[in-house]
Amino acid sequence: MHQLTLAEIARGLADKKFSSEELTKVLLARIAQLDPQLNSFISLTEDLALQQAKSADVRRANGESGALLGAPIAHKDLFCTQGIRTSCGSKMLDNFKAPYDATVVAKLAAAGAVTLGKTNMDEFAMGSANESSYYGAVKNPWNLEHVPGGSSGGSAAAVAARLLPAATATDTGGSIRQPAAFTNLTGLKPTYGRVSRWGMIAYASSLDQGGPLARTAEDCAILLQGMAGFDPKDSTSIDEPVPDYSAGLNGSLQGLRIGVPKEYFSAGLDPRIAELIHNSVKELEKLGAVVKEISLPNMQHAIPAYYVIAPAEASSNLSRFDGVRFGYRCENPKDLTDLYKRSRGEGFGPEVQRRIMVGAYALSAGYYDAYYLKAQKIRRLVKNDFMAAFNEVDIILGPTTPNPAWKLGAKNSDPVAAYLEDVYTITANLAGLPGLSMPAGFVDGLPVGVQLLAPYFQEGRLLNVAHQYQLNTDWHTRTPTGF
Image (cartoon, rainbow, N blue to C red; front, side, top):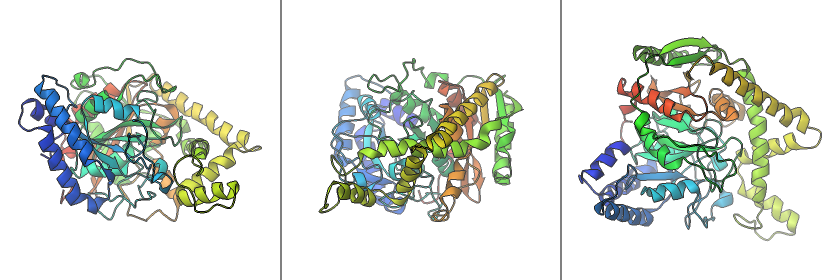
């Protein structure tokens, strides 16, 4: 049962081959047995899961149907879940039980999805390796000595190890697509505003976006269908109709114009990954796509711009965690200043503290114009590059990451080296565009992803291309040894 995809689970439940309760019990037992090797979960919600599974079985018995009705999933631990710890991977929120459900959680629960637990993540989603979590690093099921990517590494590792078929995740600078690439999954970052951020604890408000992680494009379409939609509670949510993503999977790729940016194939890209990307291009050409070289000239400025904007927004968003209202509070503070300093100093880990300090500096008097304002101008240039490119092509294709997953601890002493691993993913967040990573092969036994980018609200186009590619390749079907 644990090898079933979301689509196969939906068919199995509809055909009464098994019940949601039976499936949930199998997966909970599998998590208990295998997750100690991976550390992919922060909290398990067995009682809630069994209750939701029984309810889903009753709803099906009464004639209801739906692709997510009775399907087991997990939530990245920054989606608020009522009465359940929502920690953001931080000591600061280790004791926080959310008083309400995030919109994404509520929508998926209404669709009948079964929540198995909350997955591990880089603290406050700050990281590319899932090593900054207060609850310890997550291991990559393809090689337990390597990172699974971050910040959604817990969701990625759990799905890749077949502990569950799919999970929610978030992407601020590549945190869905990069772990998808590192663990042989399909991961989709929707257009900014497509999925509600209400109840999703913020890192950088103008960049964060929730999305699905699963083994196939078909499964991502199913999960995104349940997550997407306008939310009046979220001022950044966009009132745009949500298409039937599953219905659009089988469209022909004949005549599809694919742009491959020349800037993607610089000295920083592992040549073995470059070869796999070229192979994926050839596969899509066989399906009728037309490929041309394009240019994104301002891509080189994206990383410095991102690492000014994101920390600046983080320093503002995380100012609410002060030891006064909720979350961690230091012991016996001498006065209010001591309460603030020690609660934040003890509650936040080193990576979060580093980004808060960078962000506060960039926003301070005398430096705002030199750093933050300039970074926002670069952001507009990056967006303009994409708009010009999409006048010529329908999608943009390239590597998801410049290298395969690195060994645990390999980049801990050099944060900037880890930041540079985001070079291909952060531009989509700066521009607010949808992006997808799908499996494209292996280097030294470690998975490699190919990234697709599309114009605003064209998630269906990305899913269509990925699904057609997956019908003609088998990379996405490979399973890590031992799982």
